[in-house]
Structures are given as structure tokens and as C-alpha cells.
Length: 259
Length: 252
Image 1 (spheres, each protein chain N blue to C red):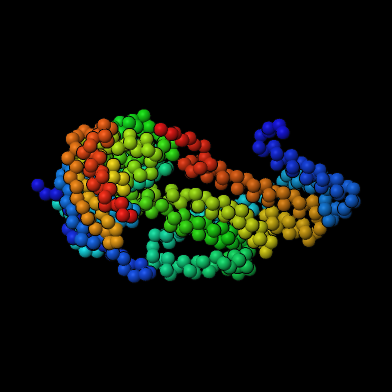
Image 2: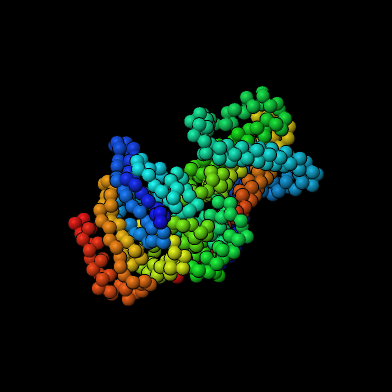
């Protein structure tokens, strides 16, 4: 097989999939209120961008997702560090948080609507909640799993608790923290869309829900494709940052000498 | 002259699910300034625990430990340690790793950096100051560990099987190098090992430990001339001393 850049392989599969989709719609004469042809979706997207009606939806969803993600991540890492360092906090708070983690957060959606209103605040709160937990648990575990021998070695040189947390435990936990950030970014987008389904006047989730009511399949697919693209970009960005930050872990380019 | 490190009737017990375990009992030892003492014993005899007590990483259950004339209550700036694993911070450069004691002890950074570079030169890694630990082999990382141990000029070196994880060749090279470094810096050393040859080759005095509970059962002075070389390994006295020590472990 000729060697292509790795990005080309999935693009080939994608092209074949779209082709099969197109052919299926043509030859099985699937009506466009069940499945629109790829070209119809493309036209809908192009028109949406040309007349500018798509941009506000994209902006709303991005704003909700990113602000919720940022708030959730900062809280998760901060509280995670606090919990991993404090026995008291662990005894009193950890069991409650674990209990909360088992609850499907989107089930809190209607309640959050009542408390935070129908505007963007309620969406951000739901996104924050949804991406908080995996990152929180990962942060706690990452900090706790710091190699005890490495900690002992640093302690033997009189390292303070603060030094151990900032210069040893945090970097040691970075791998797990990034795994949590990775999960969090996709959950954040899910949270935003679900919140928009519940009640909203704008956003890609709103676009999909409202075009479902009018059976506008091409617009629904446009929304889906945009969400897929946003999700993909988000995950890839986190991955790229991870490779830059955690340069010492396997996977990052590295060499080893033998003497 | 007072001892660099002394243990007086030191015992350590700890609680497990099956009840109390007596890890160490009635340990008496004393290391003179500039003396190299090896503690030899089978695995599980508590020799690493002994070192952790000296490093102030564990509190004693009974008895007392004095380091450089002060009771050990926690990690002291008078001691430098290396363990079996290099325990480098993988996200810090070789130089930054050597500078760790300067950071944690709050030493003036400019002087410390200069000294760190000298020490890296001493362990033969002058050219690797800006590399990262993962770019070095295990033996080289352990050399970085030795430089880090010496950075704050401690009076007492505590070494816990520092060469046990290395391949035979790096091990031999580092053993010779440690002797050379020790002859330059003349520190007191507590060196934990399970290798009879290593103990006899390096030490002025070897203490033999036996397990459950960990106690010192023999003490052997090593009158071999210094500097010891690879030829020392063929010295009949060396062989005799090793043979004597092996006598403690053959029943196992």
C-alpha cells in the first residue's frame, strides 16, 4: 500500500461514506424528510453561512461550551488538589462527590433551568457540572498516585508540602489531568447541546431541535456536522496542548542513550 | 570527636492488620566523621528502613538517632540521599534536578548553580546539564542522583542500594567512581547493600544485619588499602573478608 499522510486515510473513508450515502439516497429513493442527500446538506450549510444565520448559533454553543468547560476545569483541578491534600476534606466531602458523580448530571437540567433561568447562565452551569466530575476524580487519583519513592526522595531533601504539591505531585498528575480534560471537552459539548434541547432560543442544539419540529432534515444535518467539527477541534486542541505540556511522557518524541 | 551518625537502641514497630511487626530492634551503631560504613543484609532485613530512619523519613518507635550532633526529628540539611531508583523529576532538566536541594533548602541560587555544574563535571556529565532525565541511561541518571546528593554539601551521605538496579558494567564503573568522589569529598557514608563484594570494596567497616526483627549481628573492619582498584578484587584478603561475610548468609 502506498504511504500517505495519516490524515488522508480517514478522509478517504469519509469520502467513501458520503458517496455511499449519496448513492443510497438516489437508488433506494429515500425521501428527503427521512434522509437528505449530502448535496442538500451542503447547500443548507452554504446558505446558512452565506446569509449569516448559522454564525449566532455556532457562537452561542461555543460560548456555553467553552465557559462551562473552563469554569468546570478550574474548579475540578483546584478542589481535586485540595481534596488529595486534606484528610478532613476527603472524609467529609469525597463520599458526597462520588455520590453526585453517579447521578446523571443532565437529569438536573430542568432544576437548573428553574434556578438559573432560561438564558445562557443555565447552560453554562450544566456544562460546568457535566465536565467537572471526570476531571475532578482524575486529578485526585493522579495526585494520589504520585510515586511514593519520588516523594520520599524529595522529602529527604527537606522539600516542603507546598513544594511537593506544586513541583512534584501536580506534574506527576498531569497525565491523568489531561485525560480528564480530554473527556471533559466532549462532555462539555454534550452538556451544552442537552441544555439547549431543554430550552433555548439559540445554539446548534436549538437549531437541531427546532428544525426537527419543522422536519427540516438538511438543517438538522448541518447542525450535526458542525457539532462534530467543533467536538473534533476541541479534542484535537486538548491533545496538542497535552503533547506540548507533558513532553517527558512516552508518546512525546524522546530519545534514550545507553552507556 | 563526636560521631557523624549514631543510633542508640533504636527500634521500630509498625501496625499491620495481623498485628504489630517488629521491623528493627536494639540497633546500635556509630559512624565517625569521614567513615564509610556499609550495612549488608538479605532483602527484608530492615536495612532500607534503617536508612529511612537516619534520613528522618520515618520516626523511631524507641531509642534515638543523632546526626551531626543533633537528634533526628525529620529530614536534615546535613544529610544527602540516593535510593535504588534515581528518583529524578522527569519534567526538570538534569541541572534543575541537581539543584533540587538548593530549592528546597533555600540556598542562594547563583552559587548553587555553579556548584551543580562542578558536581556534574565530577560525575562525568558536564555536557548533559540541559538534557532531561529520560534522555539519559539508568547509570547516568544515578550519577545525576549522586551530584544532587552532594549539592548542599551535607556531612552525611545516605545511600540505599544505589547501584542495585544497574547492569553489571555500569555498576562496576559507578562503584569505582563513588570511591573516587568519596576520596575527594571525604563525607561520612551509610551505604546499604545486599552485595558482599560491593560492601567490602567500598567500606571501612561492614555491619551485617539479619531479619525479623532486624538486628546487627556482626561487624567487620576492612583493612584493605586505598585507593582500591579492580586488582583489589583479586587480593587474597579481599577474598577472605568476602568469604567470612558470606558465612552469615549460606544457611539461607
